[in-house]
Image (cartoon, rainbow, N blue to C red; front, side):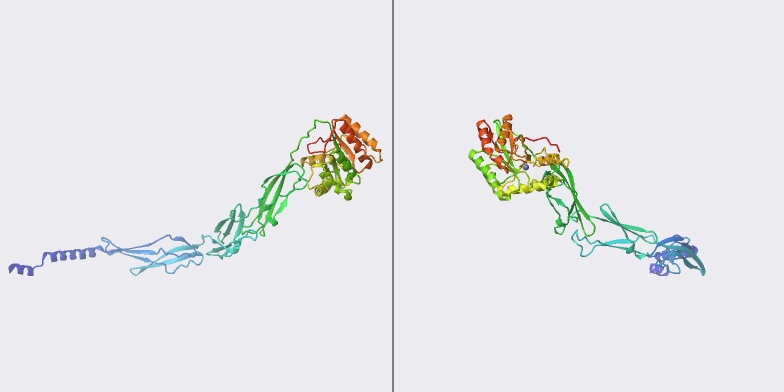
Length: 481
Ligand code: ZN
């Protein structure tokens, strides 16, 4: 009972402790007191980007205890007016702080500035052209600036190696640029040269372009739109350059280059027969006496050579007969007109080709053998200096074989001579040499009528009669023009 009473009447130890602490805190707060600290946060002069959100650093009021900080308070005071960053310029912000009835003012300068470059954007066209010729639709370039707005019209475009550079600057000198690579793979067709870019061309009268092709990336054939510059002199040995160009509607250009090397034909060396030989050759036919001549030759089994012209179309059948009977049919010229054929290289070629075609028409094959009208030594062509030397070189390089003569029958004179004189000229000539190329004309009856005796003389004196071949003795003269 006593104990219980004791408990009831006096405070317990826990209550005592509580009471002691309460007293202690009360005393502490009483002694603590408060102090106020006011400070402007952030710089007093600051830049803020145009259009950005301005975060006011504010003025800070801190109320702090002197001894303990359990009840400290911090308060941020914003400026009296909101700063809009939509206007460039220098603005003064004011902060009003009240502390125990006393107002304090703080000021801050804020510069709304533009240091942001415009933004460049490439907008690829929706329906971009897939063809190089029509041009790829260029992407649209848009430039926008926070301050200046749309600057698309002020975008500058510069074309550099492999790229396009777009650039723009705003009214405050902030620059922006954007590069676009110009892709060469897949977006540009290529001119492909048949025969390649290093081309060997056997010398010929006419240049034969090996051709080219170019296909647009959408598959369209553009070959017909390629133009070729440069030229080849097809009969003159040397190296030539041809340039193939294709330009599209936008002024874009494709180019390919070909080096053409005109090379000489391989030649057969002349083979001199071991046996004494006579090559009978007849120029300027076929004519009225050619069939008669062919009869004689057939009778003796002698093969000869005919350097033909186109002078007598009514006897062209002799060309076929001569070939069929084993004679050599070769080119003399179609017109035999000195002024015309030796007037120019081209004129000679044109005439030559006509004669070549005539032979082909009647024999079914082309010949590489020919004789210059007047022989390679002629001076009748001297009205065109150097023409014979040039023609001899070109014709040789093109693989032709020309034949002069070392025995003349003398039948070319304007006046007619007796057949026995033709015969005598021929056998006197042939008696001097083992290999003889005899010049006669089957358009002259008195010459044709000497042939039987010539053959009989030759056969009696151990000569064989042969038609000229590419590798026969050429009896070539010196060239004087
Ligand atoms: Zn002639």
